[in-house]
Length: 353
Image (tube, rainbow, N blue to C red; front, top):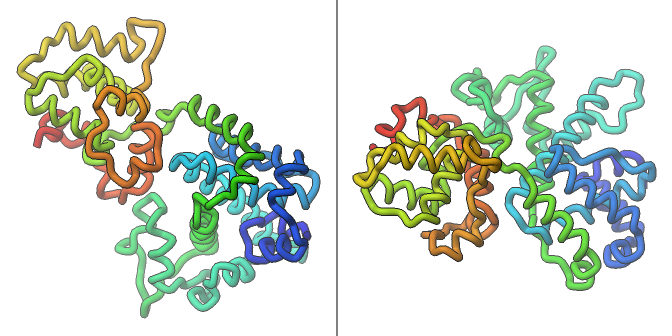
């Protein structure tokens, strides 16, 4: 097992090195605490710090921690965990790409040419005039998940089916290729013997996930991307239906968690025939933590189900445990033109339409 394998554990060469070494994963998770500890750190750090933590001193431990981390992510089996983990591994790879691709002393562990070969992109990328050209199909495959107008094909010159990019742009596309590979196949089917050996580690990661501030990156209000339960409750308010206390709490907490102020939430409720501004403002301030010691988080999916507020669940609902996780996943997957914020589109009027 070489340093390059530990440094880039998602590569085919790293996988082959593990296979050639005859590693028994069940034995590893039972007997090699250092590997399991590093694997758990990879996943936990991806949740709390959007990073995979410091590498282990041993190349063997570092390399084997990667497949064990994928097993842990599979056993946790939460969409947000899978996404954060894949993103963190890809970000670490991008850092190492920058280090290796920029070396001129011959000491690079991986070259850009080798990275392109790794992802079967050698024939899709060619060097031209100090930059590169990428086949349009390959470009669209990896650029579609990148944010920013500069990545939209309409804003790029197109020459005979190829898109000109800089070296930095190409490395960003390679980072997306890494994230795609890391996430590929997750969740895995895990044998009972391995799952049983990792029970405590999985529980610890689930506790980390439950304590996570899911709202820290959310400040975009796009009702069309709300989870079905919250869309149902918002529609009910706008139809003039009466909401039970628990339903009203769930919707109000969710709206506050995604960045709406008390005034904006009151504006949403005022279309309801039973609207009372003073009471609505009081309840919202209380839930927001303005007049109480606690800022409340929207109920989990389990709680929504228990109160009968889980309505019309879709395929994504099967892989998440919280409405905020659903909404964040939808925001991450949305195109730029789908992300018009309700507050910039006319507020309650825009939503009602």
